[in-house]
Image 1 (cartoon, rainbow, N blue to C red):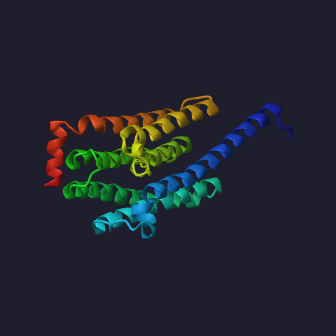
Image 2: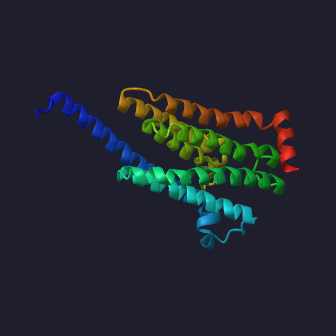
Image 3: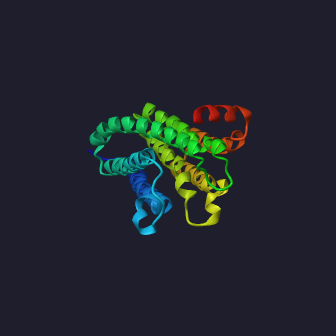
Length: 245
């Protein structure tokens, strides 16, 4: 049977696009853990080499294990997709839902515990700062829930999962070894600029805007900067003091 030349060209373009996406997500799955190791290396992953203080509680240690498991799971899922092991990826997706629930609650409880200890970055009040880690978990829950809902629409699902990665970058970026890293313009600005850049690149390569990617990017960026506005309000302080009581 003869193959139409135009159809062959279209198929070739689609395959090239898929190959690019597979390589891209594998790259992100590698770079994300590297950023986390740079940020948390001195206090967690490479702690014996830096002689830093002991972790303050078992909850913090457990939180570290949970987040490390999430990093590993994201890499494994990206690898399974790139190697076309879709069925295994889908089966592992059931485990990812359970792990995501644990990520959410341990993240929230760890943020509350830090405020109770009076722990916060320099220049931040612990009670007000509590909105930062809790906000991370709320935005994660929104993005991950959307990714689960759209799991049968691969284009939407993978882009939403990418945003869950960018959403978790700020805590690591804020711990990078230079002074400006602890400012919102860096630890929020970097993932926000990355998200906008990736959205633009994705739109350019595919010739159309992915609406879920756009919606997720807006949710993440608004979630970042609204926290800074709300953290000093009477409403948040009332909630934060109740949580820390």
